[in-house]
Length: 322
Length: 228
Ligand code: HEM
Ligand code: SF4
Ligand code: SF4
Ligand code: SF4
Image (tube, rainbow over all chains, first blue to last red; front, side):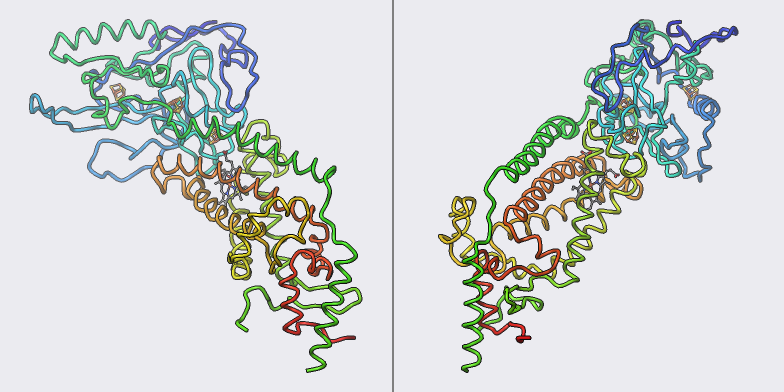
């Protein structure tokens, strides 16, 4: 079975096989020789239209319920964002921003559903040192495989969107899975299913782009000249996309990066450092062993011992004479 | 005569025959081997996370989770033991004019023509280089290592700092491993050196050949065991 086309319809009731298997991996962390997948699933995407969101957080609740997580009950500090941040128990978070539009002097209440973007070129996966702790399926989903995770936090450093969180309880990394376990069974993500306004929709990436075009045309006709699709090319595009009414300045939506890409520091760390580092250490070790076996050692000669003995005797004589 | 940096409390000539010279007391030797064990364990556990082809090394520590958890703690032990050692040895490792001469004649050093070199005190320039190099990289590694210590300091610094720290840690680890290889190689190539760290003493001939100024200083000061 191929990828589901929508989150709205109910799933098939007859028993079925998972469509996300080891054969569907296109990338696997810390694994160089991954056999190519023997089929290509249709790429999927979640489209979040911020202009339609009413901030009800049904999506957050659905996420908690489906993933069976228990976010801490926190104190109200006077903002709607709750909990205060993404956590290992809260994979998606409505971020509320009060923004005064300088052109109209209107207060605009921006609400962005934060969470993993399912990057086509995932920095988390690039950074991960543990084989198979992060995988990417041919439908575009980037998933964390917790039993392989060692809790090092490298994925946090690799991610351009500040998404993964490391649990202080089991020391493993957590983030939105795009409901890979639902998608594998022909269902759309829980958040998309729960959203009462259809601000979140799910389907093939092509369909979602078409749907976005309609939404953008509508927004433009209503005066949002800069409305557009957020599918950032710096990370190869994403499988979670936004329709933004101000797509010329993504950062106003609670610091959504304007042009996200994997940090150059991470590229250097995971690239040239590793090749030159391994080569230098390997050559030095091999050189030392070979020279140690076949080179001429620096040995103490019998004359050296004699000279030392003479020196000590003379020194003693001197002292006795004194 | 001003107090020399080169003569330490346990440095004593034993008359023999054969003549031997005490170089490190039991405390220093124990500490040296604690530092060395930590460095080897850090090298193995760190390299397992450095490159996928070395991930199998995590098996030595009981899996990836344990390796990740243990590595920084071993680092803390290394830091403490090395800096106790450092406090005891740094004076004898201060550079002097002879060191420049030694470096300029590095060809003679490598070819074993020590007779062409000036007389050397307790440490030659190569040994001093390793000493200061280790001190420098251990400081860089503990600072960058703590910044990237997810379990306790995961959120303590901004993400840019953590990215630079992980790169710095990785590069410094490679460099300290190169230094470590050089250190072990030099200790083995210069035959008769290892016993300084196992038995604590070297032969008189070794001291005469490699550290004659030090030996002469000990003799001149009468740091000689009474004859038995
Ligand atoms: C001095 C104190 C040190 C501390 C606190 C420390 C801490 C860390 C931490 C927190 C990590 C990330 C993985 C983890 O959470 O375990 C790490 C990685 C690593 N450490 Fe250390 N470390 C120290 C010393 C050393 C030394 C002396 C070496 C080399 C002999 C070394 C080599 C490495 C390497 C190669 C990595 C993997 C880097 C990469 O993935 O590119 N560390 N260290
Ligand atoms: S914390 Fe887990 S998933 Fe993240 S980089 Fe480390 S091993 Fe990979
Ligand atoms: S948003 Fe971050 S965690 Fe999600 S796929 Fe991209 S790099 Fe990985
Ligand atoms: S369920 Fe839909 S409308 Fe409600 S907060 Fe989530 S995205 Fe917004």
